[in-house]
Image (cartoon, rainbow, N blue to C red; front, side, top):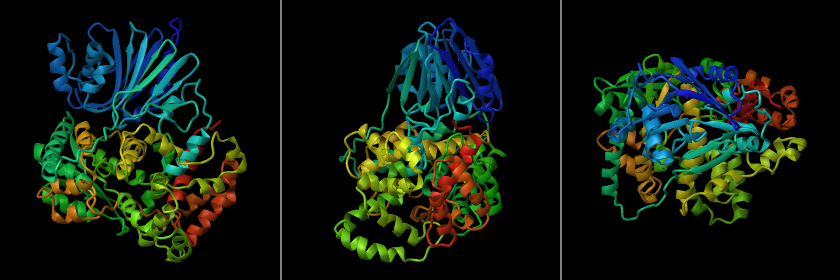
Length: 629
């Protein structure tokens, strides 16, 4: 696991500045505290910071092939590198290391960009092909590992994180107001945009080439949603068990100690159950508890750990610790992210890093197997839509609005109000309303008139329609799953996990997002995932006998924290500091009176604005750290 940076000039008569490259690389020391490496030759410069996981002795980067024509820096893990090494050796390539990075180099030498299809793993890498004077950038299929880049008039600059990229003096730090609007809508900045106008994200499953100033970018993989109605329940269960076992077993390859995040939910418990079969000795598992019982799942994780016989470790997050972590958000985030579960994920990663250097996570199961309550809500919405709109708006919604505000986790009033709010929209926009923070109408009230006037387009949910424009021909709930895989998972959940874990120099792997698991899951008919209102039906059947029955029967809870309560007490001073009228007025983006109304309504419990307030606080804290232009 590493952080990578680089700079390639359009012309060969100049050389990138090694001092700038060093500054950029130093900003990624948290991603790779064990080693650093540099390559500067002609118009190309590559650098990396390394966290040693595989081939501790000889895996130094940048790495080249035997004839030193191709150089690579690589962030991630290739789980089938041993098979690729054997195959490429048989084709005449000479390996000098036991590293998965070298398999990428020789694979490119042998097959060019087609070699991307051979890689099973998570990755973001850069290759400098000296004879072709070409830089190749590539990102894994689901976007597990990040990669940002900026194409300037005479060069390209890239890095694993924005914080490194903006160290280059040619990078413009002007805020992208459309990206900010989309962040407020979705709680993340959808690819290919970044929060800065001059910087882009390489989309998941894409490669990019830069040759003497010319840029080309294409997808090499997309989510192949083609449900096969011929797959029956028994066959689906058997195939799912087999592919999960294979994926988890390959994700256990490591030359350093390894463990599993265990929340007590189905996804992390599934990973732990399969991992426990293959590790030598007792599997180490790690979880976080909360003082607030409506958010605490520690009893469930202990029950699973006991059933699997793991060596279980647990830490409790209290309000004081959470407040300290919220203040550290600018240190954790190089781009605004409105997912408050970043806080417990960071704490869990820091706690886990004391014992191991690698952890397996259950991320991806909800998006693949319809685990979120939003999928149930879409199904329920079909019945509610037959009720006349005037009745919903005139009688039902006012009655629900009068329900007393509860700040507990997924409280009834929160879910009902959110559900009815979404009923005013078509399905795609409804999905965005249920998942996000500020609707377009709410943004028009939040932004100043000047800010709205400077936007290229007014606030909208256009990002979701752009994602669906490249989707395969699927209908109904499968479209929502596709949106979540490409949006919420790829740019939200995986970004959160990457930044929180790498801030602690911990590598996190996601076996449920192994290509083979994904390609099986998206071929399964929807009624095997969401049967009636039962979520993850096929996954639960596949785990029968491997996990306690009460674990499989539990409703999803999520990795939330008691923000609603904390914004009224321990986090109130911080909230008032970063979102107070003076701070908002200095920023010049939002209307102070609109933000004040959100805070006052939440403090008085007239409304539950926890999501909106956290989304704003995360942006404000980020903006206070970065020098915006």
